[in-house]
Image (tube, rainbow, N blue to C red; front, side, top):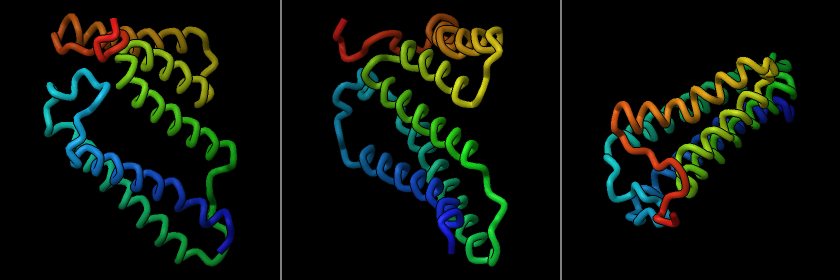
Length: 160
């Protein structure tokens, strides 16, 4: 087994471990310190999405292990540039999710969408501006004012 073969199992393993850790920390009875919506959130949707995440990561890991075992030659894998983009997107997504807890929805998602679009190689200024505006302030406006689902717009935890 070469290093390239083993790295194809790394991302699914990391996703699986992160999902299990998040599920454990959610189920361990933590109070959600710093999260203004911790006492108000519906239980079923986040846990269902996390269970889907864990299931898909486990399937992806199993698929990677089967391909690793079946391949005797060098498999056709993503280039280092594509793997770097994938890791950048994963890190940006994690940072955006963690930032949402401490800074509300609007700021982390707007910055996260901009970073995500730049990480995947979007350089068209019109599409960049449209994506940032629609998925940042646009979705916040939709949820907050039209659907009346209150997302914290700025800093949560009653700091302001």
